[in-house]
Length: 235
Image 1 (tube, rainbow, N blue to C red):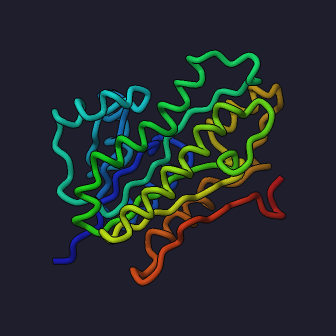
Image 2 (cartoon, rainbow, N blue to C red):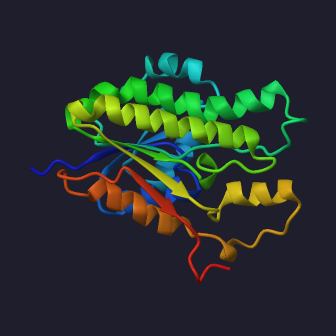
């Protein structure tokens, strides 16, 4: 019997995470989808029949270990896709600690903790960790300080993990998408006071193509970093 790959995905409810989950579900792979609460887990299970769910709130990374201790984790993980994230813009002179901590916790500390907890299963499978970063993870602009800091930190996390786990056979990939259509982009436009036109930005399906390509690359190679930017036909 051919064993189907098992993928743990955060952020599968919308945007890039949902696009990747649809691709993998359609080809029959096993999905384990992280949900912030039981209601969200039920919704995801209905959207992706046959998928398993895990419940943990990434906004509270210090409680993920406790949450997992009450649930059954997969025996092996072929890929762990970190796609969930939050964004709140504002100038450094006005951002309060709560805003910094929320974004650093959800966008950086939670992926680090989730990776730590699933590393044994990733090592068994000689699997892959994929971080959906952002153009802000390479270049911080005005009013993007807290979000960009969390994404610069995510780059550091990926780079360190790659160096540490190479001998274990675990591949690590970071994807840096430019502005991608979806709920987060709509929120950003609202915060910027601009009208949102999704046709101007990257389709999540295009980023999903890059992600799945990295997943499916033969084991003799790894895509370590890939940047995806709006093409000439966007907008």
